[in-house]
Length: 411
Image (cartoon, rainbow, N blue to C red; front, side, top):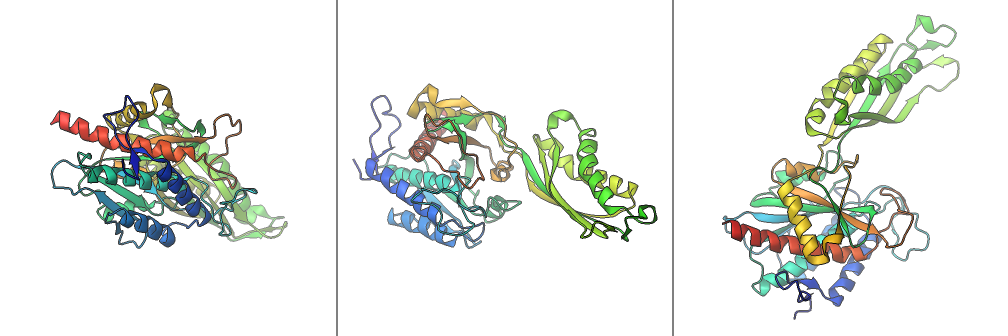
């Protein structure tokens, strides 16, 4: 028995590698350290260094991405034969204040916080890597596994695209990930076949006109009315030009115009998001949305300038890989540990990997058992039940072992 792992409980002899008490405690401490020192996308230098140091102390050889943050680490040497399974974590935080009042590990960085659970994701993949590395030393890991710690998930169009350009998928045949879900109780995961998140794009619009006096709107472009009609009419117009089952939604989050009550302004700005539930409709979205904005702006004689920022497509879980996660969780925690989950309207750049290789994402339960109020993601008071770390590590280690066994059986 190593200091890193313990033998599997009775009935799980085919899936070695459960966590020791010492490793559990270490991982909780590691997560809390990340939580106290959050870093925004492409600025995760301390986080990258902490992950690298721990992997090197485990005898592994992590490689920092050319981007300067994020890293990959292979457990075992890929021989060019059967492709590897990749375990992916995102490592960045959000520009949101941590509002937890009585938390000893709350953020120490003003207006920065891990309130999407990326510190948990990172710790889960690190813990799985440490367990799998020990199994590899014991000769019990049938095939290499890649750990991928990706920067800038929260920065559209997401750091995944940059990581892919750095070659992180070379030699990878399947990829899996988890995302914290405060609606799911700790000790459980949520799964579904097909789309589990939505596409998410960003929209910036400027409208311009000559300006004038509010006493004579007929002599100029009534820009405030024009921007108001864009806000109200564009979502409805787009919704009537695409199959309603696609769930394409234009939602505005910011509008600015004017400085005086009796002056028609010359400039107005608005911004928002475009979300979509299915991939084909997402591909049509830019043309539809831009055409609708131009149509309404022209109707009101306003000049429009539109910046449509491609974000991320939906995460579409491969059925075979989703079933692999299901079987791994059941092997570790029993059939009651897996529940169905709805498709979320949130975006996730894990989807970019799935444009290249099959994969799946699971919802990792982080709500404390018995807790009635589920803290939502991207809120300053969000926190995770830390028992979810053990659950995530067990899920990933079992997935790696079952994936290797399944490949051997198929061959």
